[in-house]
Image (cartoon, rainbow, N blue to C red; front, side, top):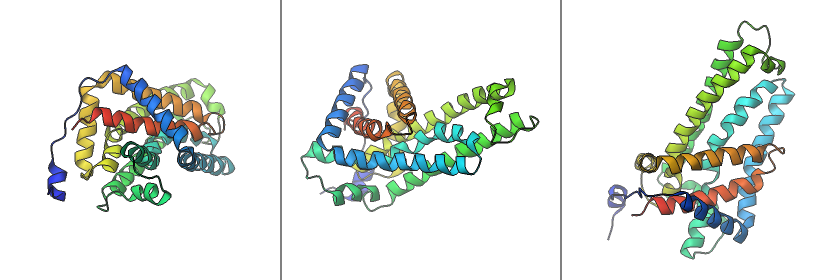
Amino acid sequence: MVTTQQARVAPVTVAKDLSIADLRTALAAGWRDFCAAPGYGLFFGAIYLLAGLYLWYALTTQGQSMWLIPVVAGFPLIAPFTAVGLYEVSRRREAGLPLTWGGVLGALRGHGDEQLPMMGGFIFVGFTFWMILAHGIFAIFMSESGMGAESLSLLSTGTGIAMLSVGSVIGAGVAFVFYMVTVISLPMLVDRNVDFLTAIIVSLATVRSNTVVMALWAAFIAVTLFAAMLPAFAGLLVALPVLGHATWHLYRRAVVA
């Protein structure tokens, strides 16, 4: 009988031959999962959508419209944790287990060892770190502009364009680091009884061994989520669940043992 400790230290083999065809296969499987159990996908998509609308409302009513830009840019950072329930739906469908709200929502607790909640805290810290960076970038470029954070007109100035350019590069770097950390680790924590550091190491190893393909997947996720946010975040109702289910299937392809 395998003990919990043995399960935690069991070696993990990562595929080194992922291809664009695997991304297409994962997307197709993700779409099938969404169509087979749309209620769960729409539920988790709605949570993400409502969170986005709340942030938009809070910032605009407080005259802080400028901060919508870093919020929208950093919002995808929290998408992986929102998708944990979707990973459980895909896992249950794959294993032939019944789909119940209790079982799916119970996955958010992890295996009762606090590993998954700790990853959630890590992601929240990442989003907070990005917002602090955004404030710092704004302060550096706009301290002498005489314009407040509520003014969007500064974006049309040379300083504003420079700020957006630097912020975009830094934001993309932060987003990719968190993508590398979470893309495989979160579905792995749902699937296996491992500690979150082991899951992070496996996630980094997967990206390192399949850099081009995983970078393409990151770019596809970023572009899709950004496009889905444009119509008042409404596109997230479909985009988030499909991408979440697809990421599960990519994980299953990437972690082969």
